[in-house]
Length: 136
Image 1 (cartoon, rainbow, N blue to C red):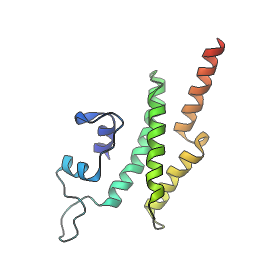
Image 2 (cartoon, rainbow, N blue to C red; image 1 turned 60 degrees about the vertical axis):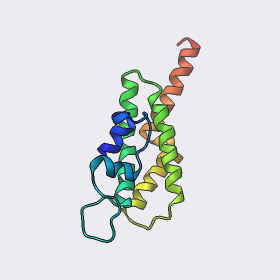
Image 3 (cartoon, helix red, strand yellow; image 1 turned 180 degrees about the vertical axis):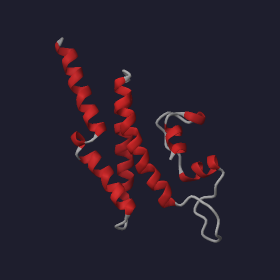
């Protein structure tokens, strides 16, 4: 997950806000991906998807910290990214397991935004912008 997070931040020459594919993660870590024909250490698709759900939790914390440091654009970028990830998870037909529960958490963070860290930051930002326009 740290590889995906650092790449999202723009490390390693990646565009900021970009997402590494499972193959790119395997390449960075020098670990095979989805090996089915032999018993070796590898990254599975399920592990990659779970890492994406963990990434969203870290990005929620980053959104709050960004506003604290005066960066008001990053939470908006994070919100769009989380919505895009959610759209990708919607396509999947997940069984009732840990991945399904974690993807449901993404759904609730997108569909009920005022109950999540990212949603609350966006609300605070929009209220702050209204206050600045009104001269408050």
